[in-house]
Image 1 (tube, rainbow, N blue to C red):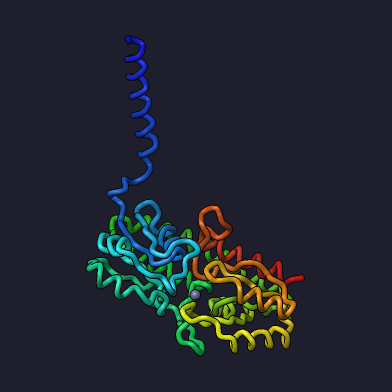
Image 2: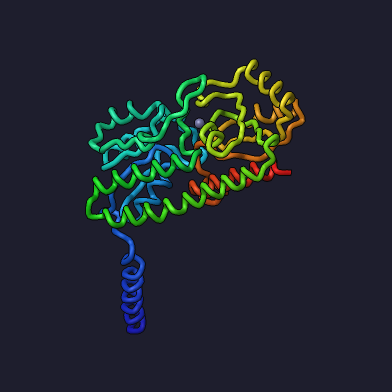
Length: 298
Ligand SMILES: [Zn+2]
């Protein structure tokens, strides 16, 4: 019995020491600024700027489609306890205003795209501004400013994190320009599933054709698909890409009917899970560029 109680005391002391070591560097959960991001890509940008001072809850998670998301009571509770709610805007989260009203949250609502230049197509405003890294930098600036205002004692940390991350985004932007620039111009044409890459196309010089519009809310029409099959044949489009958030069957049908190859999966509106190839925004953009160059450069 004596030995047992000594062992227990030693075990207890060791456990306290281990606890002290593991909890010392991180801020306690309760001290962190509670914030919500509407979708996974934005959640990653907020984490990159907020670091360990913020506790980020994401509404539409990895591989989720924010265009057609249905909020849950849990989302309402998260909004109610948040100090800041980060949204993309440009009509991306059609459900957010109702959710904000229903939750009675007192959080400040931060529309991160607010100073970006919107792109429009035949269906209306294109919300996918993050597909141009220059816009992601605008998002980061808006996130930093909102965090500094909500939590002034963290101002130095937020500014340092943002500066470090902005430098990584600058390197990413240059990488994409270089990689896409290495694809022969006549081969810079691809088919994607929904029209999520207009900003990417405009910045990096690639043409995307898609059977679905800027939202996934309406299904691709038979006429739309026939039009794409004609375009793929006429322009000898080398590759058709799948997307992580949408049904692959249209893309597969277009590939089968035209002889274009399936180029792989592009991450358009959501990250992959942590084990996947697009667990962060930077990984997502690098993955897409790898898939595009692998299919088109040859
Ligand atoms: Zn989309």
